[in-house]
Length: 331
DNA sequence: AAGCAAATCAACCGCATTTGT
DNA sequence: CACAAATGCGGTTGATTTGCT
Image (cartoon, rainbow, N blue to C red):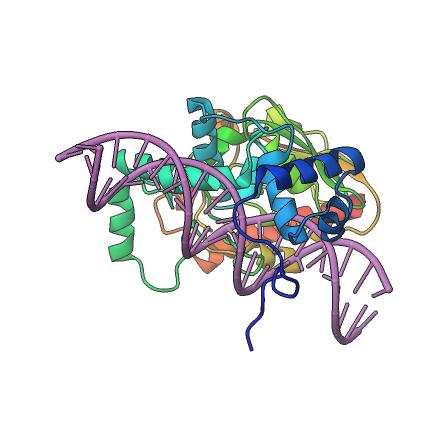
């Protein structure tokens, strides 16, 4: 036997809201707040289910809603955010004050998608359509999932849009094993989105399961004297680590199909249990590349080879392990 | 002005996750 | 720990509006 909707048990109204219903709901929430949504309809004198009341409030009655057409700036931001977040409409909406996930979703499906296609861009992958077609004909079955589907925790691939790090800019991430991560954002549009991602949950549940993560553009150094500008990438400050060699992660090395969970399962770094707060700096790939020339790069020799080899993955894992161990020791 | 198709919008549905008991 | 209820999310649908012939 199939499920029934929440409106089924009682004879509750469905469909469009009347002005009278709106007024009742608005008055009730203005005077008492919404509290528990399931009790709202009863308290407000409405023949609706709580879910319907919540939706009406969020999408229509909320006083902070911005109405009217989307500006070109908003549309651009939606495209940029979609390139990073995929169809995570609520997270996209969180970056556009006064806009709801529902209207952004509608705009995307009815308008933006079409515009992108007209410009020769695939709205799912944000790549040129010609490239996507080529991929389709060359790739075989077990490749990364399309970005249109939200990656699950299980299926998180280290894939990102090629221009992602341009949005990323310089971030200062403050890791605290009790509080999770917080971020001091810079002024680029996506930066303040990122901490919202990071600050919920613990390390494994947040930063290392988002597309932001370390992989695209970072250098890892286990030396506490190095700083962001010296090593051109990713570092942490803290007590001296036992490892004297610095660890480097080549930007864009080809580990697209490795899962973060595979790293996180094996690295003590991600399992820190004592309270500590460590600043972590990440800068954009562009900045990285501008500064990287003086840095010894263990992957440079393999530049023209297929980098997606077990050896590469192994080196990368070991570097992460080393970083993890020294970080763990500093906690 | 009428008819039709496309575009837009509001709301529902089912599922996943979170919270409470 | 198990279960149920509540909440939140994204996909989808269907009604309405808009634009074109």
